[in-house]
Amino acid sequence: MDRNTQNIPGQKVESDNISQTGFPSSVNTIMRNKKRILNHLPLAKKKVEIMKNLGFYENCPDWQESRKLLNTLKLRKIEVSDAIEIIHASTGMNVDAIRKDLLFCYQTGLLEFHVTDVCDLQCIDCHYRQKNNATIPFSSVSGYLKYLNPNAITVTGGGEPNCYHSEGKNLNDLVLLIHDEFPHIQIGLINNNTYLPDGNWYNFLSWQRTSVDAHDAPTYEKIKRKRKYDACIENIYHLLDSSIPHVGIGFLYRSENITGMEIFLLDWFERWQKMNMAQKEKFNIQFRPISPAIEKVFEHNSKNDLEQQTAAMILQIKKQAQSHESFDNFLKTQTNFYSIDTNSDSFFLHERKPFAKCYNALLHRVLRSDGNEYPDFLLCNDPSMSLGNVLTAKNADDERIRIALGSFYFYHRLAEQYCRDESCRQCWVSNLIEQHWNSNVNEMNLPDNYFF
Image (cartoon, rainbow, N blue to C red):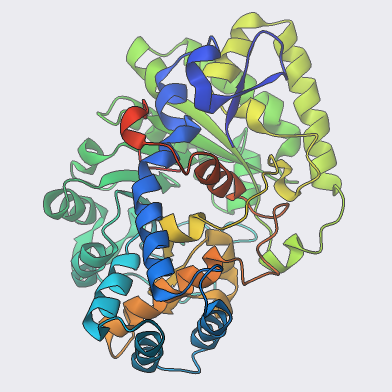
């Protein structure tokens, strides 16, 4: 969904062809190159092949029965062992082979890991505040990652990852465990950054992003309900001097802060100009819209007040950039500002992309701090959309198989009320995979980056 501009402010150029934008930077060529999702194409193809072999595909003879089975499993009206017997009777495949294939399909490409709901802030409209401060047990992490086998993990929350404590272990121990036991996994971190845990955890991150969401201390306190703006900014500078290759700040635009977006950008542009070259190279800003409760997404039929305010503010900033070339270049190389689609008729002002199947459901998993797994973070607000919970299950392997079959359910967009092009924030993932389905990733110049 990220885009850059070329020559004319507001003119959009696909960032998956970054070499033609004229504005190369490590941020754009690595962190904002959309084609990085294609690193997961072999996994998607393998899962689709398994789906076809097991009859969970629309051109399979027993597709209608398989679809009913997926719905029945989603409602937990049937045991996994009984479902496997049904698949065996339909396909003639060996039961052990079926189980092996489905356990493979439990794997994911990118894991969004909500390690804890404990937080040192009290943000308004927090999705997770009433979750009893659930935390993933440290002793369970290795088991999860062994079976999920992701290529990349975004450690986030929920709550504040820096507050993670379990069984006498903290965030530093968690990052070191991932790095030591699963060295192939890339690790990213999204946090509030109001304090920094002890240790050398930052040496093992591919990137980090601090949720700032405000242009000054009063606005920060209004949104976060804590006076920690100064500590947050100070810690950003500490991380800019660390070994982390990409250090970013996030601005979740909403009614409480949208009028400060221009001040926010001009302030950080001035700060960026004063940074040394190493800091400048790694620094970036990520704009994202506030995510409403999921039920409000499909009530949305036209642009609301926030979207109208945002569109007006973006136009104002673009006018500023037209007369300020260095500021315009900063927006292009160090931020995703020009990716906000003010002409879109979709919710969140994102670029609407059509897709036939949800490849995000095959390649992405959200593991919540209570053990529930979801195919997308917006669905975490609806417990009925949980794929399953290995942490609380009596039979862990059966639950992993149930989760794998649940991902088939979402792949076929059977949760119709949620799976609309205009409301899907990850529509670009499926669209891009479908565009390049017949491509050979070995012949593509892809960045060594598995995040999306």
